[in-house]
Length: 376
Length: 117
Image (tube, rainbow over the protein chains, first blue to last red):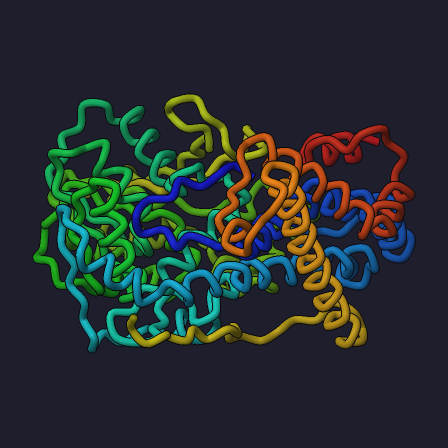
């Protein structure tokens, strides 16, 4: 496990908590590298041959693979372990955050730095966030345990680091590094003055952008007050300058044509079919003429084999990632066109997970994220 | 010191079960949690032994304050990997019986190989 950099807002684990978090991390590495591949071996060794014998053909899609693989004992074993390991992540982190919470809240208030924070206690949290706790994080990203609570953010910061097995880097800001690196490679001379990041959670990505583009005015919105409070404090701690506000990306209070660039980092798959239409419409409204949007998300189903597609969707069914299943088949170009973007400007880029400084924290260096881009 | 704040410890959403009998899912979750706690205890014993080696005596505060350096961290990771492999040996054995191979490589490479045959 690579060590995570402990910025001043980090909830430091005591001896046994650190040992527990270390175990969960190492166990997940073991699951991914040693146990998971058996699913593929089992599929080709016994599941596929049995299917072919019965149907005289191979499964035509991932849904057919699901029907047979979910009955395979090896897959059942791996799934039970994978699900448990996910719950153990949060379990191993919550204790250390809970123990330090009053101190973290006091620390957040005392930290000096740039940017701002605007909380809207009346904001209605949409059903796609309340129906189930995303990634099984207890209380979800919008949960609040009390006044000035920032626990959801502190739990998220450590929990996502363990979840990704360090693939987001020692500062847990890898997605910001990937998208910013792509942006500057693709548009090296583009002038940007005001940028909005949608669904920022703890602002790890947008804070990285702010550190790289110190003369740009950054805004960031999210549904979760506790994540935003933590994010603002974290941004101050790392020297970023970001204006955080609690808003729904479907309908913000910024005036028309406010931004040169709108970004999101793995937001879209956590929303819903009506919401993604609203978000794209909002992007169109918020962008200045000639403005650009960049939405980084998880792979779609197109181009994946039936088995690969089935395995990618484990999280849809078992890790409360419900909309990801639909996004995998959604015609995002069509959604953007309906929102007012010229289809000619829409593009899906497959962006390398390698950072611009050459680091490849992902175990599969060929892994790419789709980035949906369009210009107004 | 301010009042402690309780964080809700359970997640919301329908719990899936993978085995025909959900009790087996529950049993698996228990076995995994116990594996974690035994590993935590192992680290604590390791800390205690290292401190005793170093100083010949120790206090609880010494244990709590102990932070593994890179060398200790690497040793513990190796020890945990061996431990996990031992506990879940039965699953590795089943995996090894599925397709003959020397060393499991990356997922995509295997997919490619198997698709070709």
